[in-house]
Amino acid sequence: MAETRRTGIAPGWWTLLLVVFVVAAVWLSFALFTGSLRKTVPVTLTADRSGLVMETNAKVKMRGVQVGRVVAISGGDSEAASPVKLRLDIDPDQIRFIPANVEARIRATTIFGAKFVDLVYPESPSAERLKSGQVLESLNVTTEVNTVFENLVGVLEQVDTAKLNATLS
Image (cartoon, rainbow, N blue to C red; front, side, top):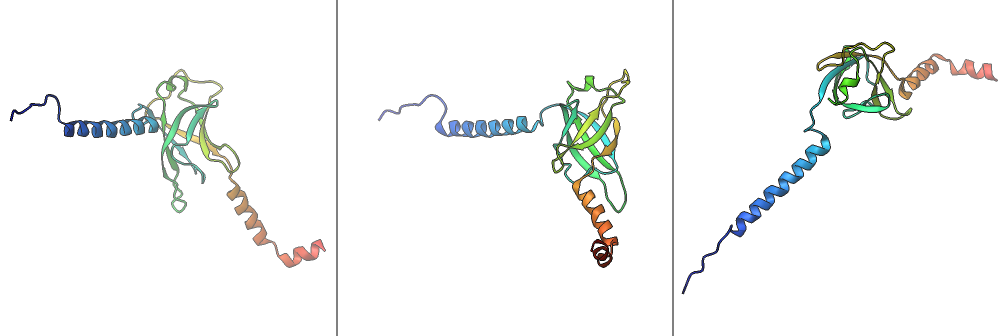
């Protein structure tokens, strides 16, 4: 019996290469989708409160254009009255359009909608640009429905219902 010698790579190695390729393709797709391979400029935003619907991955906009996203939210303990710190990742290609004295507001898309950070272009912008590690302070946070409801409940608790009924009758 004559032995025939095969040339090339054994099928087991081809299988391993295929599995490695598929895992690498899935990881690369996930990394590109989440933006974790993109370089960003970190900026911190402090505020008295962030609101209920502020989430990570919320948009950071300036003049209606998305220039970054919220990466982390920390602080904001109601008992300690500590300010909220939002870590913003600003796109490096957009940072050159943002002056260092930019103002920030936390706004909502709708009355029940998710919040986003709105960078407000100042009337007299500085020549310096926003830089890595800079700390911005939020001017305000939009009022939420739950805040209005809490205030209304507080007023209704103060009203004596029997006297109100007699007055209205």
